[in-house]
Image 1 (spheres, rainbow, N blue to C red):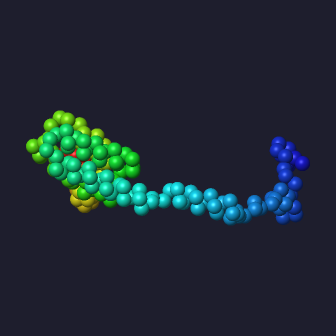
Image 2: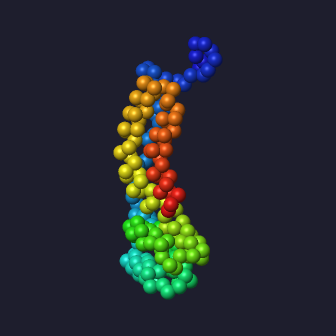
Length: 189
């Protein structure tokens, strides 16, 4: 049947204006939890769970790599320890709760007598695996600079209303004041 304008076909409707297709449509059957779904879900969960052996292997490998670095007599031993830590972080997708502590300990290498070009390359490779987004380096700057945003914003509003011709340099100074510590932390990590 065509509508009154004659341009588009209309669905046959019941007396209340609801299309018959909607009235007689069947609802999808509810999801069932058959034995296949239960077994496959259990197998998937068991596969994804970290086994205690796997976790113990991680801890022992991380400890041994840090011990190699701590007791190193030469730069090649330090580089080997850093490579082991980097490989461990790549295998396990990071170091988890050990990340911050490990990064802090590895930063002390920069001031040691064993620091040279070979160690620096190994250090950068390991850090790229351990903390690729430099979260540990930026965290303190972010925690303190977040409190500066509100006063900076209010100060910019005052400058914009009272001294509008000084707003562009004030805006640049405010951006430097707000984001400078974060940029500094990233550059020095």
